[in-house]
Image (cartoon, rainbow, N blue to C red):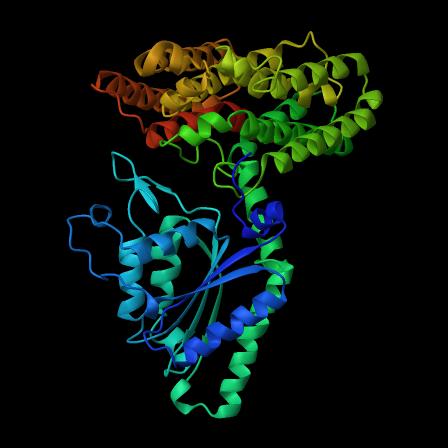
Length: 514
């Protein structure tokens, strides 16, 4: 299971949350020191394990004097601080805002402590890096003489942004809370007492975990939405709708129920892929919106257990929809066989025992399910019969275009898939071999469309020149790619061209039927 992105869960595994309070004011008699003591008092009342680290008492050189900070030997006090950070689930930084940002003491501490190889790790291309402190959370408590609203609206919070994004976020530490007390210069004793109580309350709040209820809900929703990979669903919907409109009759009830079945089945497939492809996804440095998964498991946004529950729930909903719809069909046996075969092939893409994508059959599986089978679902669910030739003919160019796109999508994932033991066509035949297969499939798609149009079926009509032109553009891009040495790993533009090529063969006939 991936490491969780929330210190709530990490602490729950040990039954006790471990908190490190880092007090960054260079004076020991400061308001920040009092706030730190109040926070620690509240945290201990909450029952968490808390340690206070006073930077003013540490003995270290705040300047990086070597070419790179990891080359400079850590003083014993910094080794001690490093051990505390490694052990902690939640970090609390308490410091004054001076000149819009942090004191030099805290800046020097971060410069020396957050070194490459420990806090983060660059890859050879320096475009990607590993956030090695991922899984921890942080909280910022700062004082200032500037009114906080002025600092937010006019100064744009440079110190907070530097800490939250460029420093802690860069290393994988998530900042969950920012508290500002000020203006200090205009405060009275009553106001400062209220601030100390607020800091104490912030520490006590840890009894409920690091994240608020709203944050936990807010965390889950985007993660689940991202995991669904909704960018690929419109093509399934268009193909299904095309099949439904080809049928001799049309029922909105059957149409909605049928698409709900397909939607939940696709959802179960996507989530099962996230779980089964985790080893490949975590190795993948060439991921994009079109390949490499949604990354929710790799990033720790969701757990494998959560995704497995999602697979079960989506599968049950698809099955319930089938139990309602299939007995009502004109040919329930054909509908049931089609649903069963589609379910086996869709979930068998990565799930055992089939694991088709690990046996070199994944591209064929995706091409069949997203062309012939989805279109036939729309057709059969509306009472269409197997011997009708039109759905078969319309599915043929769709099959070739989907095959080309899914084969190309395996090229950026090649090294990661190979390392995980996944036998995609790109792994089996290399980038140029996969490109050659995509070239053949693209030619077959365009050729079959021309043949169907010449035969008088009228599926594409005035769109045929656009289909041929798009095919030529895709072929030119593929030939250019195959001629490169070495072949580039990233190919987002080519994937966009390949995926949009599919639209001609589902959207064009669909529009002609409407």
